[in-house]
Length: 252
View 1: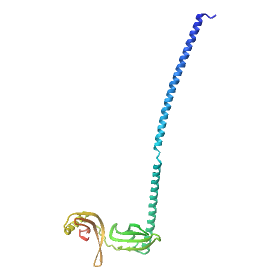
View 2 (view 1 turned 180 degrees about the horizontal axis):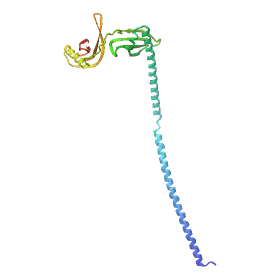
View 3 (view 1 turned 120 degrees about the horizontal axis):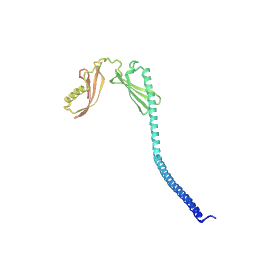
View 4 (view 1 turned 180 degrees about the vertical axis):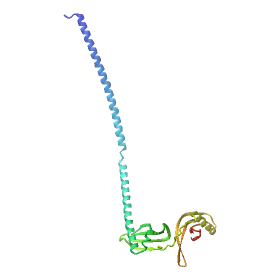
């Protein structure tokens, strides 16, 4: 028979093993609880970030009204671009009609062709109106142009008006008078006529001016000045010779 002390020892040893097991079980259980807590916290945090990200992306999706506005804007841009392209094509076709008419009717010589520049083209109801202005060595010839009225449906010239000068005999284009000097000359002349000094230069341009004298046309390189008189109110034009500052013509 097992002695009482031995049994007590066995019970003590068994109790020690149980305590160790219980302790490990408690440690493991505690670790499980801790890890579970971390896992739950991680999931909640991850879930919140994900939901926040989704919510942010959803908030950036344009509303239907905004999408409709963007679509309407794109449609408008497309229509405007198509209209511009169509207008350019129509103008090119109309201009070709005018140029063919120019050549066939010999309104200008081949050498003068390069001296014409299209300055205006517009549609007037059922007709197109075109105007070409004349240049000489890249300087505008004042009041010298060719204009056309073209039927938009039949694509043919209805009428034309020409005051093109084919024999401009102006070779000396040296400028001795500046625009500012020409303006002072014109102001002095106006001041004497109107007894006023309140003027404003609206615009100025270097042009070739033609003047008929005894049925002979003479050409001048001039400053064309448009001057506004404020008191008394009036609009005046001066043509000042760039060589000597002489007033070639003025109006009214």
